[in-house]
Image (cartoon, rainbow over all chains, first blue to last red; front, side, top):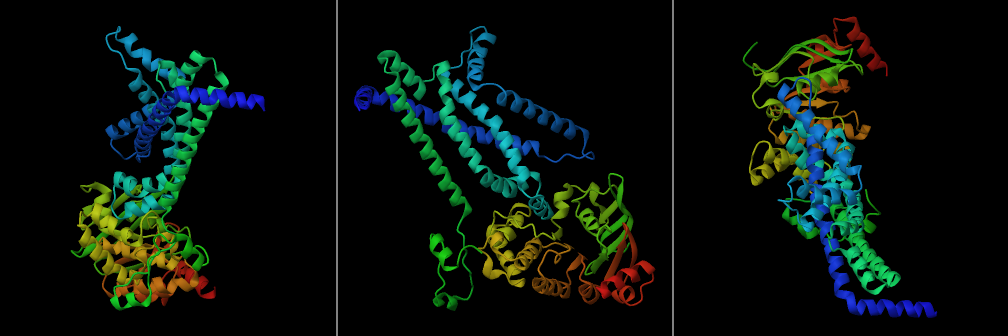
Length: 274
Length: 247
């Protein structure tokens, strides 16, 4: 019991003195993770669209060469950034620019951190999006083509909205991984939560209490993100039921009402989904 | 060719690898024609329809749309496809959109029609197929017959000159076949030009003014329904139809 009391005492002592530092670190972490995940998703979507542009032997030579080059570049990008540790990528990018420009150009650590995490996420997302696009029934694409849509319109209006819904759990995965893995950005001096923890333990030598605080903060951040994304998923699914509509205004008096916002109730009334 | 030929298919062939699915197909479609394409499974009926809509690229041969070769048409396949509607065996409604949106999206994005006008057109055709009540539903909430009727309304909303049907009732439960055929019957009466790949022999007999019998990737026989169903000239046609009667 005594040890728990001691731990509690140390934790509260640390929190009293360093709460604002921990919270600033947490804020930096979540900012970096959210922004980099969003940028990563955009990179991934772009790669997904580019990679799935149909290419047949009857197309002209310039289009074919261009598409082959684009696919090769995306492939190399994915393999390099998925296949090397992010901590090394950070060091690589942060020091490459001053080294190659003879110290005339320097990349600040904050843009460097955003850049590295974004392109790293983008590499994973490119594959996730590609898998998501492949999982959509070919009939959806054919249906869109049959009414005259081009590849870009088909992707934008038909395939990607369905892809997004299917890969949302994977996007949530990426966000949560990013919240935790941005901790390696301490290596280039970005002051996220883990860097704060390291700084505080350097001053106080209270390794375990500080680690306990950091663990709890990380867990709170990831759980909140997880809950928000689950909620977003259920929103995207829309209501389980729909209104029968009529142009006959007299019918409005017969008790037709909206199901919107009454998902569970109407489900119970109808004995579950159709 | 005459002036009212909408589509002319000339020496069309399609190979999948070494498998020759279509061989030297020739036929033409006039305004108001209802052409039924019949034949055994694997005879190339669906592939022919998909070639006409360029969902499959023909290996050789030409398809002329109002006398213009569509393989060399300006604006390419998308522009041409917006004039030629297609109804699929598996409906292919957009799962992420409501019934109404399914019928509007093509008009807005491909034809550049305003939202209000697109909605009016969509409602007009949804009423015609008897699905106006369900405009808020998502495809997954509908039965097969309902989905197919929406798919027909979606194709009609683009105001196509020709409507292609690829076995529109083959994926439906028997009791839902009737409602879809009813809609198609009404369209034929309205003078819509249609090419229908079907196994519904009664439909082919009653509704179409031209029947094409395909066998082994070639057009074995074509002619009026009476000619094909009552006095088939070829032994293969007679055999095929006899199999249908006995089953």
